[in-house]
Amino acid sequence: MTKQQLEGIFTFPNGIDRLYLPRQGAVENALFQLYEAAGLDVPKVYSFKSPLALQTAINHLMNPNRSAIFDRDFMREYPAYGNALTNGRISVRNRNNFFWDFVSKSVAAKSSELLLDHQETLKNMSKFKHISNSLQKEVENDVQKRLAIRGMKYYEVAQHPNFCDISWLLNNQKNIDGLSDIDRGLFLIYHDMIRNGIMHAWMLDGAVLWCPLPTTIELNDLKQFHREDGPSISWNDDYSLYFWKGVKVRKRIIEFPESITRLDALEESDPEIRKCIQERMGAKRFASLFSLIEVDRDCDLYGEEQFLWRTVHVDDLTSNHLYFAEVICPESKSRKFVEVPATTTNVWEAIALTFNKEAVSASKKVEA
Image (cartoon, rainbow, N blue to C red):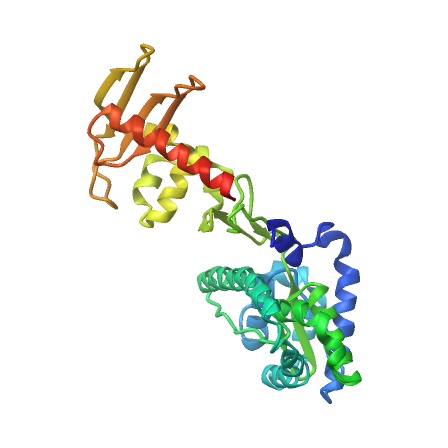
C-alpha cells in the first residue's frame, strides 16, 4: 500500500473546513440509526473539532464544578454545548459499554466471520492497523500531557465507534453479501459513519460527543509521521502534532529551527529528539553551536583541504566528544559538513564514512 493510499484513508483532500458540516450531518444520521437499532432513544449529538477539544468537553461534563472562567474561550467556541451543560440537559450516565457491546455483536462479530478464509484481506488489514494504532497512541499521549497541565484527566473514549475500526470495515466491505439484510444494513450504516470522518466518541444515555479525523496527515516514504515545514498531523482548531521521521518533537524544532540555541541542544535529554534537532538544523549549523577543535586535516588528490573536527565539550548523552567531517564531494565538488562516529581518528576515515553513508542511502532509495 502506498503512502498516498494510507494518507487518503484518514484524510480529506478538500479539508475539514469545506466539508465539515455535510459530514457532520452524515455522522449524526448514522448515530441516530444505530442508537435506534440498539433500542435507545435518539441522542443529542455534539461535535468538537479535535481530540483535545473533545476531552476538554468531557472534563467539563464529568467535573461540573470546574470554573467556567478557566475555559471561557472553549465555551465561546461551543455555545450549544456550554448552554446544555449550564442547564443540566446532558446526563452523565455512560452508555459506552452498552453501545460497544451492540456494535461488537451486531456489526463487528458477524462481519468478521466472513474473513476466516480471506488471508490476503487479513494481511491488508495489518497495514491499516499500523497507521491507525500509531495515530491513536500519539494523540492519546499528547492529549494526556496537555490535559494534565490544565488539571484535567484523559477519559477513555468508546472502542466503538472509533476510527481504528476502519481496518476491518474496509476489508469486510467486499464480503458483506454473505450477511443477512439486517446485518448488512447495520454494517453499511456503521461503515458510512466511520468513512465520514468520526475519530473518537463519548457515548452517553441521551447524548454523543465526538470529534473528526485530522484535516491532514503527512508521512514520509517509510510511512512514518514526518513533515519538514509544518505539523505532520493537524485538526481544524489549531491542535497539531509535529514529527521528524516518526519522532514527536516540539513545534519550534520544525517551524523555527533558527531559534534553537546551544542550551536547547545540551539540555535535550532524549537522544532521538537530539538527533532530530541536529538533522533539522543541519550538521554545520548544529556544530556551530559549539566550540570546535581541529583533529586532523589533509589534502585530497585534487588539492582540496579536508577536515576532521570535534567539540570542546563532552556530550552528556554519549559521554564522548561530537565529531564532524568537513569534506569535498569528489563528484559534485560541493563541501559537506556531517557528523561522524567518535571513534574516527583521521580525515581519511571521515571521508570514507561520509561517502559510504551516502552510497548506502542511495542504494536503499533504489530498492524502495
